[in-house]
Amino acid sequence: MPKVGMEPVRRKALVDAAMRVIGDHGSLTVTMSEIAKQAGVSPALAHHYFGSKEQLLIETVRVHLQRLRDSVVTALREAKSPRDKLSAVIRVSFQADQFAPETIAAWLAFYAEAQRSEETRRFLVIYARRLHSNLVANLKALCLAGDAARIAEGAAAMIDGLYIRQSLRSAPISTEASIALTEDYLTTNLNALKG
Amino acid sequence: MPKVGMEPVRRKALVDAAMRVIGDHGSLTVTMSEIAKQAGVSPALAHHYFGSKEQLLIETVRVHLQRLRDSVVTALREAKSPRDKLSAVIRVSFQADQFAPETIAAWLAFYAEAQRSEETRRFLVIYARRLHSNLVANLKALCLAGDAARIAEGAAAMIDGLYIRQSLRSAPISTEASIALTEDYLTTNLNALKG
DNA sequence: TATTTTTGATTGACTGATCAATCAATAAAA
DNA sequence: TTTTATTGATTGATCAGTCAATCAAAAATA
Image (cartoon, rainbow over all chains, first blue to last red; front, side):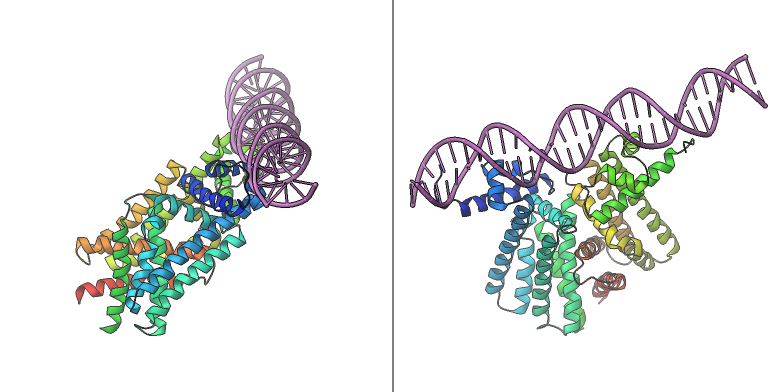
């Protein structure tokens, strides 16, 4: 079995396993054993590559935010007009894998963790800021800067809120309905400014 | 010290202590010792009265949702018109103690816990439904039922979203700004329907 | 009133389980 | 032979939960 160059393979497997276990469990109180088992290696190996459980979890949130970022970048590139770019940002936020119950459970756990882990908090703040600035940048092409900031704040809150409500799985909202609601928020606000 | 009739006093002290410790800690991974210490009693006594840590935590969320409910009921009674009642619901959601960082941290922890504890989830679902139905009931007096449901969904999501964003403490939004944003959402939507 | 009994309140000490982290040992490539 | 990958076994710490013992108020009884 021992071949050279396993490090990146194992790191990825462990990070993916962590996300899955956290999502299933709906909490960050997961054991290294569970994660390692899910990744098909021994707990000791997880420590070998990550040093500590905390580091593995931080790496996990970092990697997944990076993937989310990549999705946004791609979607933004494909959209042409500012209005299309706004829709693209919304669409990515609610895309299937992001809106899956286990993914939401995992994000929720990370948000809670951010209360204690400064590093986790920093990553989430960066994500929040990026969402906000993506929205503002494109809104500015459609309305005044002051209004853009306000509408972006509202839209970002609505997106996050739809997520957290989804996590309760009571009266679950479909992806389409979530997108429609957020789109509607933008449209109504922009129209109100014109009128 | 041992006087009769301490049970209600201790239960209350422990529930309050739990909320404080959870808020400080920003997580439900708090020890019975911490909670008991905060309440000024021994860990054994906490077990004596609550049977288990889980029961104490469930009781904690139950008690605090009950308090929130009482605030809403009072505020609704004081408001006369449907539009005023909508404002009252919003105002209570963001009232000072609810919007304090530790309180938000605690709620976030409970949302995460709901992924695992069916009982915690049930309480939070009830709260979410109540918020929704309070909004719908009063919106129906101002627009069609279908629009009322949609607007209520959006407003509830926005309220929850403003909470979760507050938990990150990056670009913190003031109570007033949060209220204004939600009020604005309602007003803009209702106006759009008239126009 | 004085004395005894009962009962609720309370804790320190203990147990058993869990888990992160370590480490020495092994196996296979280079 | 040196280096990299890997694990089983172990350790030390933490914690929920238990239990037997103590203490003092209240209730019953003399």
